[in-house]
Length: 218
Image (cartoon, rainbow, N blue to C red; front, side, top):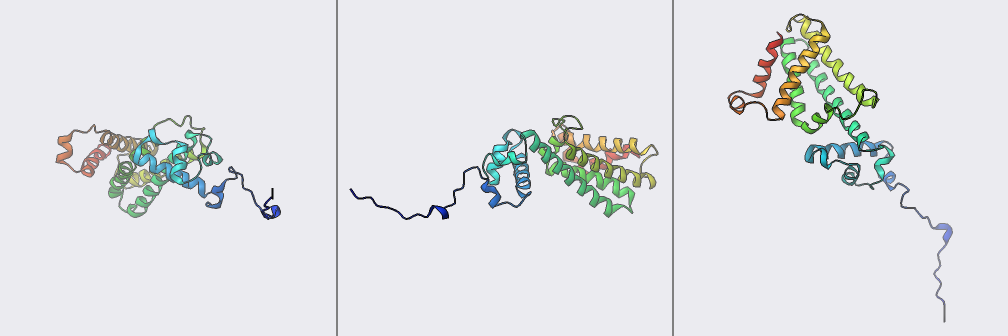
């Protein structure tokens, strides 16, 4: 019996174990985490919280099911990152509104409320996550809480401008900020949950209803 030998130089063969993180060949450092957050937000937006898992986010990002564990301990970690992204997005919207309407406090109050409302409408599932309380205590996720504080500080800045412009009735800034936030958040939450009377929504534009709501603080 003859033996057929195949000439393979083992010194030139490179063997990659399955778990060597082939994702690194496709993602630069840090990009994989952002890609997973992007995928998670897309799943949350289109399918809701029930369909969002580390495995589904990995599948949507086109990486192995073990890849997310390089950045997230569990689903809760991913949810915190998504909620953080949501607050940073909201902060950018409020910042843009403040820059545009700073010289017109009356418009600033309404447009800030409207920017908040539009964010809630466009990202309703993320909006619900951001304010759901499922992420635990305020010290559980430092980046998340920093983003929350940053957004709140922007609201306080808006209120300061409105108070100086005498658009809002005189009261301590923090109390006024909480009042504005509560009214706008409650208003859009009722709308998202289909709790506002249909006959009212048929008669008035949503922005008109918001503007009327804000007059309670003037």
